[in-house]
Amino acid sequence: MITVVGNLKGGTGKSTIAFNLALWLLDKGNKVSVYDLDPQATLRDVAELRSEEGFEPFLSVAETLPEHDKGEMLIDIGVSNMTGLNEALARADQVIIPVSPSQADVWSTQRFLEIIRATSTKAPTLYAFINRADTHPSARENAETEMALRQLGGLEVLPVRLAQRIMFRHSFSEGLAVFELEPSGKASQELTALAEAVYGSARGR
Ligand SMILES: Nc1ncnc2c1ncn2[C@@H]1O[C@H](COP(=O)(O)OP(=O)(O)OP(=O)(O)O)[C@@H](O)[C@H]1O
Ligand SMILES: [Mg+2]
Image 1 (cartoon, rainbow, N blue to C red):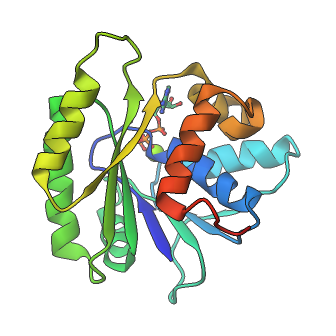
Image 2: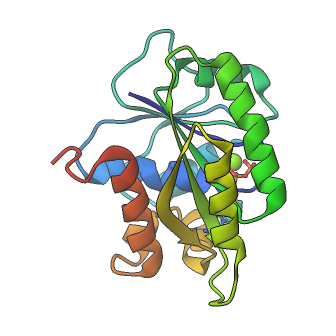
């Protein structure tokens, strides 16, 4: 299965999610091939840090897609490589769309859906969820953004939110998944809920 993590908007957490999901899949005993098609190469950099630190399992990240699909594939994309973005979307079975809680992010998601519709060949399942959710109890942006996303239609808004948490930042600076950094922490629980929503809880077990 080919899973693409994407959105037109920068900094919504695509690479953070791709990195953590790849390690979650490996942790559950799945084989996964990981691709970073963004010239920024964030995913490749964090995988390199991980390998320099000697953390296991080793995460191998390629920068181009293979000619033929192979097993479980996870792809991080970015708008600075539109050719790669289009190629990944054309082959995607599912697209995971991290969205920050703001109106601008809803608009850019709408544009992204138009690109997916024009590009994809497999009618992929589209999942959106709020990343960097505001943790303030009175914040309405999270629920408002989810409602606006539902109104776009054609995508499943997951009942999962990843909050704005220092642990997600540490994930990159340490080269570790949030569930490796703090197994019972909130970031770990949120990431697990996302992974199970997308891949199913029994995956690889
Ligand atoms: N839930 C979160 N809480 C706190 N920080 C986060 C969260 N998600 C992502 N970040 C941080 O936000 C920054 C951008 O994240 P990331 O690089 O994953 O986004 P991206 O969508 O891949 O960006 P780009 O469009 O530049 O490729 C990083 O510093 C990352 O650590
Ligand atoms: Mg990125």
